[in-house]
Amino acid sequence: MELTVFERANLLSILPREGNFKTLKTVRKLRESLALSEDEVRRWEPKVDDKGVMTWRTTTEDGTPIKQEAEIDISELGQEVILTVLKKLDGENRLKEDHFTLFEKFSGK
Image 1 (tube, rainbow, N blue to C red):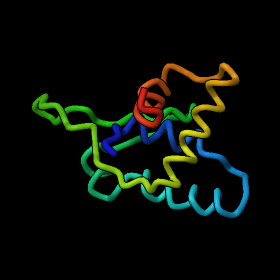
Image 2 (image 1 turned 90 degrees about the horizontal axis):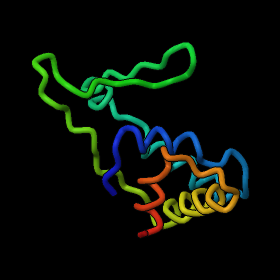
Image 3 (image 1 turned 60 degrees about the horizontal axis):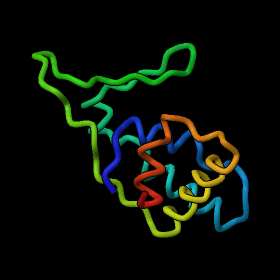
């Protein structure tokens, strides 16, 4: 699935920190898949400020846009875990605008 840096960071922030063994094992694999690779770290140069806000490069030195999307392999079970979390947030009216594209991608809406 193609995800932006922003979407990946948002997913990492909403993944469950507790659950049954199957969920936790799936979440562990998801965290590895969603984490930035060494090449991506060099390309985007992510930084986290004192408030915990992550920023990254979106253009090269000459102003050329840097592609923000990457193909991320997410298992069927991983997709189920993500959709469950997003639906829970939606049901509790806690879905944020930051989650909008994720909800569309994972729910097919």
